[in-house]
Amino acid sequence: MSAALGFRVKSGWAASVLLTGPRAAPRVVDSRIVELSDAKVPHSRQPYHAGMGTAQTNHHIVDRLVRGIERFSRRSLAALVAEHRAEHPLRAAGVVVSSLIDPATIASPHMRAHASEGRLFGAVTAGRIGGGCRARGRCLRPARQETPSGACHREGSSRRAR
Image (cartoon, rainbow, N blue to C red; front, side, top):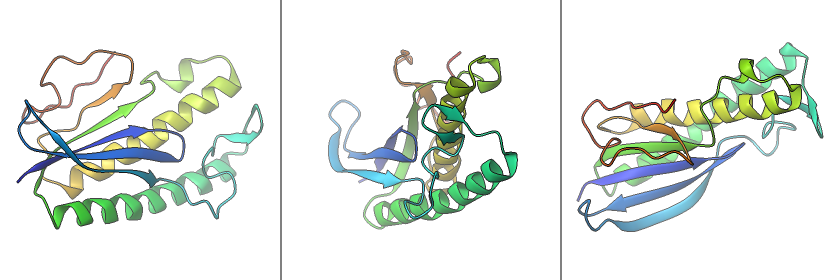
């Protein structure tokens, strides 16, 4: 039976859910936390923060942390997708993030750091799931905005909320 994989992205981790069955009556067959950052690497959950309430201004530190997050999340998500593919053909995938706002438009350095982390972890998740399953498209959208029914399921769909 084919399946759909969904994610709710947070800073450094994501909640994942695997659904099977018809659209009208999906069934949850797996739900878990997927680590997107390495707990052994200090500041990898919040790479754009230098400390509590302070934005990281050293671009070398940020670049190093981001590269590590990309590597770690690639392995973590690939393992999850491979495990699910062993049991179910994955036909669709979706990612829900907090916001799609451009961090550069935020004046507050601290809030910009949060937006940058949201963008980073959303992007690494959306980028990894597309290559790991035969998804009909990824739907990256904010959590509090409505997406038209079926928008995440159409072939080639890649709707972005504004």
